[in-house]
Every structure is written in structure tokens, then in C-alpha cells.
Length: 404
Image 1: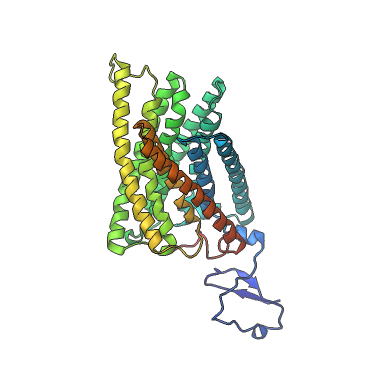
Image 2: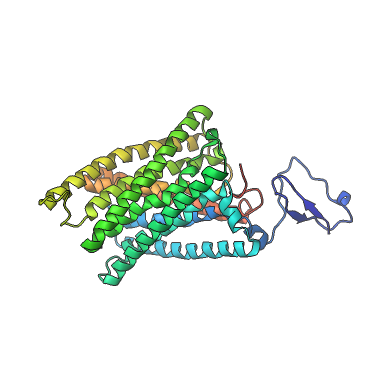
């Protein structure tokens, strides 16, 4: 049996030809017919199981949080959300197992982290962790045990340390080792700053049930790191807008990734409001004796800032939506999950603002957006599964381990 080496779409791996005495005996390819790739073994395809697969778990975890934050609840909603949360835990364990298997079989861990494209998706692992920590509070937070609160506190601080290290070390590596051209700027450049930014989102969820001695440090750290992540993202936005003005919209296959820009302002808005409400009643500003007035003042400021940032998120959402509708992608890529997770943050922020302003209309918009998010999650999931079956992903030359 002869082997064929393809340096193009199939990379440089060898594939077995049908049994013939020589290459000249191989059937002549009809170039007018679509190319059917050779079947690869599972272990060969596992080489192309990239960090971008964690976009699946971060989106599913985000969906569980969205269900938990619904303004219009009905019987069985909690059970649905809990089921989605548990499914996400199973998916996360499965993805982690396959990633470990990839690195054991092919030994390319450092190569994957150092890759100019795949390495940018490493932070999605930490974004998945963030959704699981917040989900613990949302679905199991009624447990009054002190051990549960302490566990969440420890997880929060461990998450802050790890994601701050990711933001510093990954950007340091990118600045020193990989030259990117500004005219090719994509929102995925923001991803290393995304996990540390979600420290504020975690703090906004867990702080309210924490003891006073723990709540204030958690909110302080959450506010600090939320600001760091958002500022890094905002600086990247200037390059992104400049790239759009100079070079136009990205290739149609990459346009779903434009929704990544929806996330930072949306998650910052809901984090600010949540952290203001999570402060203990005894908290005061600059030694003031009227803690109730101080708390109310901070909540008003958080609402104003939240509405301000929500509008920015809405603008990015509309720009990305129009771009995708004008030229929908034709082939599945894992970046399609960007149409779910950032928009989940935007939808939760909408619901939080509706609750804060006691507006039934805004809450109704949040519920309508939630239905769209569920539909989009199902749509992307079905296409994800089909892409694996059809060898549209996990195949040489078709994943994030290929440079653009």
C-alpha cells in the first residue's frame, strides 16, 4: 500500500492510498468533484484537538448561568439549569481528558501554548472554570454551611492568582515572540485578558453570601481585576476599530469571532452592579457613619456605569450581527461559539439592568434574548457535532493549530 504526503490542506502528514501497484495506478481525481479527505484514525485526529474546544464548555456553563438569572421563572426552570450545569461538568471532564490524551500521545503541549493562533484560545479553559465557580453559587448557594462559603472563597482567590498570571505571562510572551500585524487584528487578541476580568463577575455572584470579613476583600479584588481586564480589552478595541476602518471586515469564516467584543463591557456592567449589591451593610466610604447612604450611592454609580457599558456592548453586538448576516460563514469553526458566550453576558447584563430599574420591558427583552441564546447554543452544538463527523474539524489544516 502506498502513502501520499500532502503539503497543502492536509498538512505534511502521510495518508494511505487504496491498494495499487504504484502511484500511476491510482485513480485519476476528478477536480470538478468535491475533495473527500482520507479517513484518519482517532489518535491522528486527536493531534488537532485544540484549546479552542473549551469554547464549548465556557458557552454551556454560560448558558447554565443565564438560566439561573431568568427574570420570569416557571416550575422546572431550576432543574433545567441544574441539568445544563451538570452536563457542562461532564463536557469539561471529557474535553480535559481528550486534551491530556493529545499531549500524552503527541507531546505538543508547549507547541500548542506557543502557537500564534491556538495559544490565544488557552484562556477559554479559565473562562470555563469561571462559569463553574459561579454556577456553584447559583445552584448550590442555598447551603448555609460555612465550609461551602469558605470553599468558594478559596476558589475565587486561586482563580485570581492563576488568571492574573495568564494575563501577564501570555501577553509577555506574545509581545516578545510573535509579531502580529495590526491590519489582521481580531478580537481573539483580547482573550488573554478575559479570564482575569471575570474575577469581578465571580465576586459579584459570591460576595453577597460571604461573611463581612471575606466579602469586602473579595469585592475589592473583583473590582480591581475587573478594571484590569476591561482596560486591557478597551485598549485592544482601538486597534480593532482601526483595523476595521483600514482593512474592512474580516473574512466571512471569521466573522462570528467579532462577537467576542460584546463580552468585556457586558460582563463589566453586570459585575459592577453585582459587586455594589454584594457589599455588606456595614460597609462605609472613607470612615462615613452612614453606611446605608454610602451603599445606596455606590449602587447608583454602579447602575449608571452599567448602563453606559451596556450600550457599548449593544453597539458591538449590532456591528457583529450585521457583519455575520451580510456574509454568513460557510464552514464550521470553533469560533462559532463566540456567538453564544459573550452574548450570554450581554443578556444577563440586560436582565440585571431590568431588575435594577424595575422595568418589565427590559426584563422582557432579556427573556427574548435568552430564547435566542438557547436557540443559538443548540444550532452551534448540532453543527459542532456534524463537523466532527464530517471531518470538518479535528483534521489537518482545519483547526486553530494552523497559522493564518
